[in-house]
Image 1 (tube, rainbow, N blue to C red):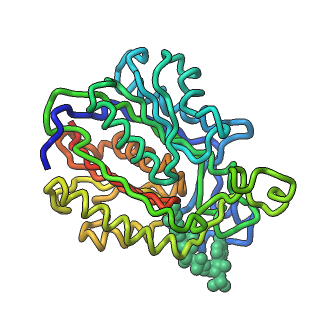
Image 2: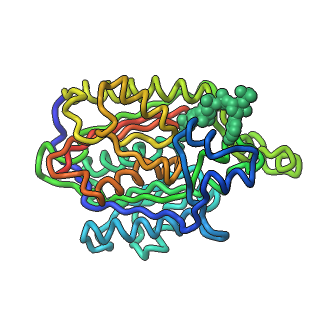
Length: 332
Ligand code: UT7
């Protein structure tokens, strides 16, 4: 495939996780579970939950401030904000608009993307293409989730798995060819939304006393089916993007997968014939932070010095929708 003439590079990363940490033992005081079950079935040891009144946009601001600082840019040069979230501050206006004001940015293009756990890659894909078009120069890409606001703390099959966090990157257009976001792919299959969904609160079941009594404003998940699909699709999309850009899996320096379940990541590693050392995982400390997860792991990997100039990095995610996506990055 021919390279796009305009490159898009990541010039700054940042992330934020709330101060309140709940261990698996803490969760076992809320629902009938155990540290042993959560660790062996998911790989999660602890997660962070936002404080009372701490909003998705508050976490997004904290992550964005760090990314802006790391990029060393003047924030007034940012001309695009995309926020990936399934837990916005409110159904509308978008969290991106709220962020535009909180960060004191100009009257720039700002919108949310809702692609659940694939959101960060959907946002990166969309933002990169908007920069490649020449219409935009510097974009703030955010993944931010207050998952605790939609968790059912009476449902042990879901509430132990998720956490709150925000991640941010600055992407910029560059004239240097062959570096940065080489390409992204994204897909969907909406044939069975009930595999992973929040039944009420939209136009299907507007909020009512009944919907609240039936606990329909919380996440519902068919974990087993989602697990099977995640293993299959993340493997497929990873090999698809490598093939599309003429790379092989042994050329990957670092793979950053969506952090949902360590057993899914283990299966992906086996399928791709890659050692786990090539993966960056932080699921044990943050749980599944949905749209924030890939960016959270990317920022951590960068801060830890795991990403060097010239490295080939693969981001891959899967989530509700169903949605999936992958991005291939040659770090500049
Ligand atoms: O980010 C979006 C994508 N999401 C995912 O990728 C999540 C994918 N799914 C998964 O990660 C796994 O399916 C889970 C971690 C959710 C569940 O693991 P599993 O091995 O599929 O367990 P299961 O649902 O088959 O449940 C096994 C048993 C059940 O008991 P019985 O019916 O065998 O007696 C559950 O009731 O474990 C029980 N169980 C629990 N026990 C203790 C379910 N949740 C818990 C819990 N603590 N928290």
